[in-house]
Length: 451
Image (tube, rainbow, N blue to C red; front, side, top):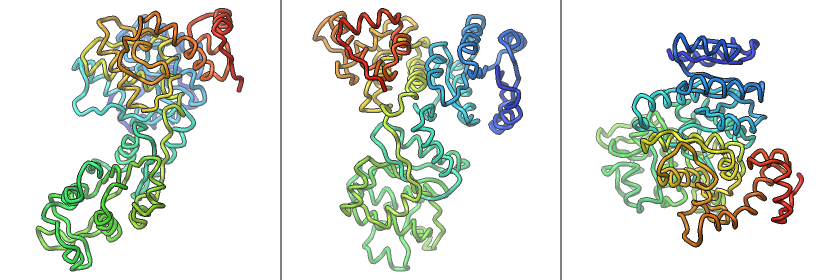
């Protein structure tokens, strides 16, 4: 088992916390103060989970630990009702932030990821960016409740959202919680023509006239097809509305009957495959217009999960950005970098029309283009965004000073909006005094909208 030092966990929660973490093969060493934690870490180094329920005092503890043990892995546990602490934890140098209720698997994954990165000096083979679900925001807590419900069933799941919102990440999370090592097979229905798609799903040997498929009342499936590869596990369909009607009909029949004729043996076999589909917001229109068969839609949408856009879950952006920065640095084999407060505030305020995919692409551009240094500052972000807030390649339309001057008004307005017009919070996020913020607002004619 992996040992972790848990600092600041309330005594009343320790028994339950220990039980939760032990399910992921994590053993807990308890500490009540920074001094006690440092004594334990002097005996043996181990990852630290720091409970931030004490707010500013706990954050000071994080800085104290970091000053004495710069190489010790530090993680934070926050109350989902205090998303501001997530930002502060990231700025204090934690590797990852976990929201209550704790998920033992996610904690174990994050610790394993960081330990492996340290030992290899790079990213884990096969590690997919964004494998963890950040749910500090109310919108994502609702998603996680549905994920937990879906994980306890074998019913079809429809995950609807804009591209880049993590539709497949959610599907994989449900699968992992329920799959027990079973296969997860994914196919993009829009990436193949009709004949290719049918061959990929049912196997080349399963192609045939409709009469052949219905000869014994069941569908014909080959071992060469993805349906057979997904047996006992999950078949994840992207862009299912683009699948031809014939393919949809055959899929619906297999999912309905839960059996198929295996062409290699001629025998009818059980076909336990859990269907999931990741779809765009316009999917409902496709169903209404008849481009998606009703029987297939019914089997895919027993449980429906609507993914919020990143701009509607801004509380998750600091931890997600920190995750991407660490993952990108490991992949590129460059020293770990940290985000400054102004840079993180700007990132949290941008519209992110491309969602998490766009966020990661921006951070990768910034890190790839930096000559050195450990920090990502406001200027680094400004050099890679358009004035309307979208991520972009560096523009040569003017100097950095000119770009910053043009952007300053929109930036301050966006941060004020993010903090609902609260001057104190916005000034702290911007890294300036309240009086300076008032002065800038007057000179730039920035109004605040109190909500």
